[in-house]
Length: 512
Image 1 (spheres, rainbow, N blue to C red):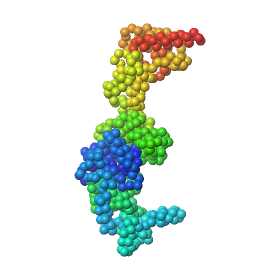
Image 2: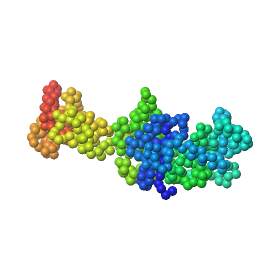
Image 3: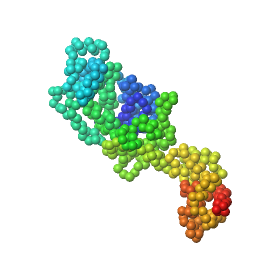
């Protein structure tokens, strides 16, 4: 195949899980890195489990993440239709070819009878497999006469199974290559004859995805490792049609936060973590918040998802979507499962917040901040406040509250925390020195240098001196860079707080 074409083919039976989104992302990144096309195909052959809201959730999730398909049901190309339910006649044509060649056959077995066979085998500690060893003893077009077969076909109660292995076959093994897992060898005698066409007139995933991938000229099939056991069957189908096979790669599982077992929807509830990109409304009484609703930046979320199972081979971790395209290499995808770490996701968001231009945040949030604390701010220091704040929050929607918290002062809290510093006469002298010094027009660096010199003169430890000054100005014992806060607060606010704090300190010493 000369053209690079990759597809994401979700089944609209439920919301798009972050595992599915990662599959979409990796397909997108590989396609764009190789100057190819990214295709979205909706695999809705399972009509019984079809959920009309699921397709919208899939499309909206991809749109929010900016993983935009070049071809899809919404923006079709020349390889459509892009929903399998609209390709029904195509599959019928190809399954008929397999029947004519003896590579597939009609099966009329009763479901309940097959279930009884499975249970009987389980009692003996065995596994029932519908295959070359027993197909002649079961009810199908191989074991029945042409007349019996026709009668059963007229009843329209049948499935079509693929003839995976024949007793007289020369090849008992199949060997194929996976880009992530290397060479894989499978014993054909152990394969079952999978159903490839159902009695509702729709193909199963196995036939439909192979036919569609061929007709849509898909060059790479990148999907979850749960499809690895089906790879042998898919190879056999390609060979049955004498078609060129795509490059295959099967992605590792995303594991629970504990590192054991595959991440599921239930884990979201159990651990209190999001497992969907955007909100999913289960029913009118139940919904699940997504990363979008919690407040994640798009690039941060995509960056986090990209690193669950892949690394660039360097110390770099922070990437925009464009940077991921430039750095992504299928060879760097790991084989083993990768743990979902929500704390790491928040760290990615914090790092991406630091990348946002302060001016952009000012446009979005300055009025909200000024409405609450304008009377505290030094002239034109809103930019410095935003710059200081954005390094201390995980989510952008926390910026206003954190900015106000940084500049907050509460007399009662100051009194509560006063017992946690080494208060004495020298500390009061030091705070008085700062109050007198800050009242003069003095550069911030000079003010800091003078304050440290005075601590040294009074033989006060730096920790005690800094903690005391922070307490007097913010009523807190820790927080953002203190001298940056001093630069942001206006002189009137600083003097008012120092006077109030000094009075509380004097009262404390007198009462002792």
